[in-house]
Image (cartoon, rainbow, N blue to C red; front, side, top):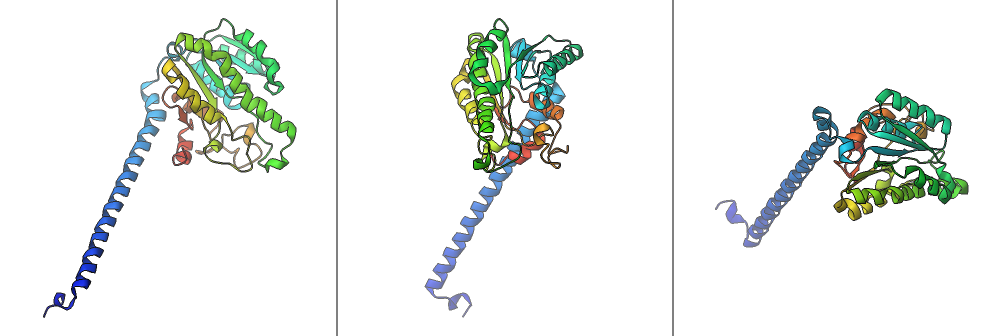
Length: 300
């Protein structure tokens, strides 16, 4: 009598069922492993495509692709200034819009002399709300605006509970972070649609990827606004990009010594802009920086 003969038919049936379960689990495990591997390969491909291949082979002529002029809001410091310089490096004429005339003139002069492009300035305090946009529209009349970079923004002095945020700051966030981008798009988009080309870059935040306590209002709106515009206007030749960076070493991160210290996860404004411009026309929703790519891969 063998060991197998000592098992009853029920025991053998249970054993066979268990064997089938193990095989099914092995198949599920293999499928999961394969899907994760394919996902990693896809992420690696996108990383190369956005941040490294353009450096090796150069990128398309931005003037030919979009137009002669770019408008960059919030462009006297930080990411806005660096982004304007990076566009100028590619031969795009630059219109700087911010509230400090002296700083605007200094940045415009530096860009014109360094990159041999035309520059112009628009003095605009975006915190003032609706009243500034008639003058803004007039100032842009007659210029071929190929690229709009909505970068102007304000941040909490430090992360805090919504109830503790001063009312004046909330209005500034509405007017500067939300209304400014909305109205600037409304001003430049019609001519882009007529010409069937143009690019709109809305600088949002990595905090938009999920609910972000202590930065409740700051993290709202721009990302979804950009994505909705994409569905409306991509077929009309307009490239619309949502930039969702994490921390960058600028005045906005000065509340933290750790976050204002540059490293591979916290780039300088110049390094960030260099990476971000390389994604223009390639990705409609991106962190704009290779280091931040790793932080947000599983969130977007």
